[in-house]
Length: 165
Ligand SMILES: [Zn+2]
Image (cartoon, rainbow, N blue to C red; front, side, top):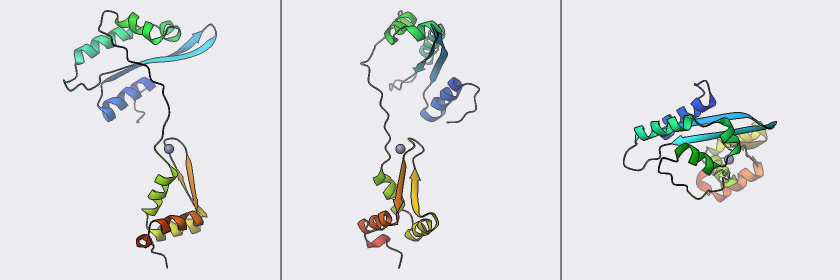
């Protein structure tokens, strides 16, 4: 994600427009209620429905969303906010889903990335660094392979990739 815009909202909107090709608006607010710090936000997005995007509806909904007050975002539950903003519209609320963080990285995937490299290169890296460390930039996990691990990897992957004599 680029950081070309002045606000986090604008950067994220830009990301959705460029990467996901989805028209998106974001409202992020921070403040406090009775001395307690609060942060809340709304995301408005056109989802592809195969019928083409209705820009006019989007602009209308964006105007309505513009009227949301910080206090409403901080103190009301989501359905109440939806009702206040869009009660004249046709609103459908889906069953909420719990958000969980998942990363598709694994030690196995890291291992297959290593064996895809020329074995002599891998051997050189092992000699220089003692072991090979792969870092996942997405979730922050580290996967470390020492020379024993590496030898085992190449044995599993057959003699075709065995280039060191
Ligand atoms: Zn990861």
